[in-house]
Image (cartoon, rainbow, N blue to C red; front, side, top):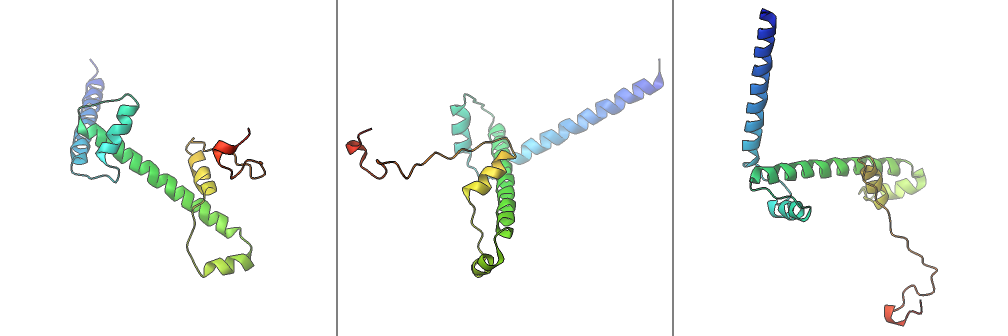
Length: 141
């Protein structure tokens, strides 16, 4: 019998025990944390997708993951917004500098979401259509 293999197994068992206790502590801490996204909203969308769990910690875990995702997308969209602002010609940028507010556009958000594999398509809008702006009941299409 190789003494190193039993020592290796002991270390592996100890590592797994440490991982399990860290996971248990994390799950317990979820009940003390109040995420930005309400549990009821998370439960609604989980149920809508066909998932139900009696464990509220799981709902909180999804809420925390969703909050992290939204924060990362918002941060990336902010970076896209700043990069877009930097490409504006100086004469126009000086006029905007007085306000100093950044405006999040759909283009910024789309670019940020695309980095995470979410493709956002804008609905086509044809302003030159003869029925644009008409009451839907009077359209002859």
